[in-house]
Image 1 (tube, helix red, strand yellow):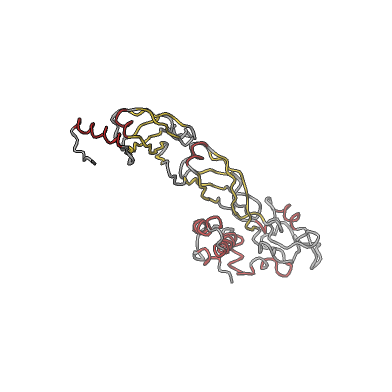
Image 2 (cartoon, rainbow, N blue to C red):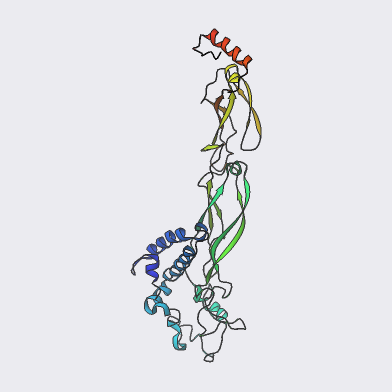
Length: 335
């Protein structure tokens, strides 16, 4: 027997909130997108979804507690009408034993959301990580994203029941082979996502209606959590950008200009004041991350790294020795 309570790690008297929390935690842990190529995680994810599909629905849970693995056949065994249908009359009246009937049409008129086989709580939103470079976060970008989510079963349309060769549901035909009666199957979904200029680490990009679908076809949201990847040159501090700039020792001493490249791909001339020291920062106002939502435009900071040459010519050494003598620096002569 499939112990759905054990799959979710909850007791048989767990509340709806306990079940929802357990499902959310386990679904994120075993989601195929977070465990690429891990078939065990994918199988466990399917079991978790199957258990939640049943235990999150009060009617299904009641039948499961009564009939165990046979909960889907229990209420209709022997051709009897389902409990609770009094007031609708016999839903199978006029159908020959062993015959077929279009259950989608039948139950569509009885229940305002489709077949009762697929009724359950709306699917939870799914959160996945989206790797974004500093450059894409700075300029904005369009990304093609492919995710694996739980979608409506294409074979049974979410009803969870078998169809005959005429496309009708069999009255006693059992559960759908593809989704095993769950009404949902794992499916890949590809979509084009816009990363806005100024996006920050941990920012949520919500794709409405692109998340998992429940058995009735109601789709939740897909939440893409921005993860800024480490960059070999640029660091981000809030809306500010920090990077190193190498300055020749002569420019550091006398002042001058050096070119710097920003994450936008543009090059700016940076004015260096005379006597600047290693580690000092020079500010480029308004050249940080673009403004987004309630965040203002940031600044860029160039951190000075003074370059001392190792390949001095004899003439350069002579000039430096003269300078050292003038300044009375404790230089070492290499002659």
